Image 1 (cartoon, rainbow, N blue to C red):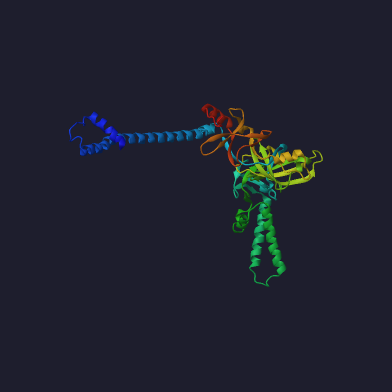
Image 2 (cartoon, one colour):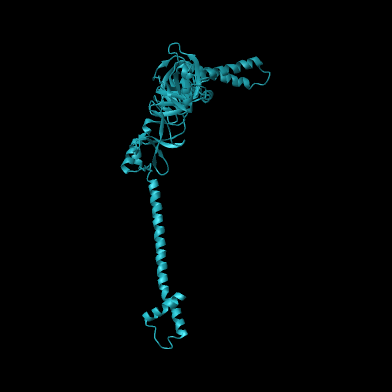
Length: 422
């Protein structure tokens, strides 16, 4: 108020409101001028408030844009490619977990069929191949027709069964005491014997039962697939007459395979039944389980034979392929050497050479796929052996690019991303 009292004469003089009349000097006029000053200053306050609000809005906008730019820079490290680029570069991604395998100890091996899922087609009667229904290498399902077989021995076996089954049906309907128990037993055994002969020719129970209602069908039958699998070792030729027990073909379910390996006594010390093993076939790595070992050394090679079972759901691997075998880093009993202790302490993720590239500063890196895209991650290589590398620096369960990493590294270099903030 004191400031306004001092400023008022100057203000009134500048605005022409000051004069020497008694009225102008009256207290009423003085109060009226004081009341008018806030009204005169109000537009200035409104303008200042509006400018302040605009400044706050601009500042908030600048902060928002800065946050967005920062977020974009953070996500810029994720490389995004098109599906066509992915297919052209053959980019393959696998979920990899920590592996306990020792890459310094490798054994040569060979893939063989799973004997628990393989059937040899070899009827136990002399036969003739009348018709073929499949081709070698064909995938068949259980119950599918493979061959039509016939011949005099098959016709005789079918006729013998019809007679024996008919006789047993007649005897079984007799009232008790009409025939002796031994005679009744003999009739039943004879019928089952004739049935077993037909089962040995690989006729199904349904086909055998049909003979009693359709005796005119004797002389041939369709050989049906006992399991689902692939036709292998197909030796049946149309019109060929074969002796009893001659293998005609083999059916194998390739969803599982066995691995046969020859191990030195030093290597076999680390092997236990149920233990995991890493099987490498070409560029593919598959984990299997040890299911057996011979516990006997070959007199010539001085090696022990070991069998590993592994899954092959896509049928990409086949019996006869060569493989490399790696076992866990478990210490042999009683071996406390420094070398063995060092091996057992290694723990990382195994990737092929095709997964490794060099970063801009020369360090090893791999590419991990996430929801934003492909991100390069620097890693440390602990072991390298025969195209495999034990690495550390990523989490177990990561989606790692195992093929096509060189293409991603090239795209990353062209984009100019500095993903490591160096």
